[in-house]
Image (cartoon, rainbow, N blue to C red):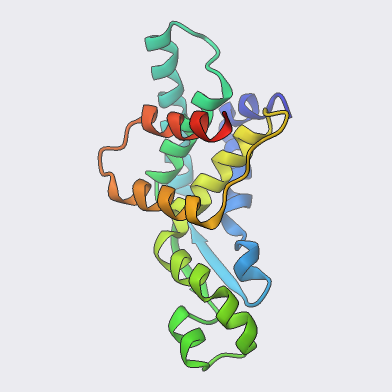
Length: 179
């Protein structure tokens, strides 16, 4: 795993790994119903270009040819969250369907998952971007700290609301979470 970020420098590997992650529905949804993501290959390629540019910024400003995994995760999050890789989601049952009961999802599962489904309908790109960057960062930690739904919701809201989000802001998210 120590070479994961080096692997992401390669455009083909980056596109393959990002496509795989972004095409999968989160467990909270996939366990109870079908969820299909429509991905933009052009946006994945754009995200790679942004990731490499973000790394170069750290390299130049910090005089470091090898930024640490927190900075790399921040550069990755910045690139992914700003690219809007998932252009559409197709949930078997919307949050409205789950609330009204017009779905094949069992009532208990619907009530248990409703909060996450509502969240996901609004923040799917941000949630997938954060989770992917977090997993990459955590791969370098001997005992990574996890995050809960509340933390994820706050981070996703921040990522969506901040139109001029800096790479440094993304980097500090991982540094503060893992320390």
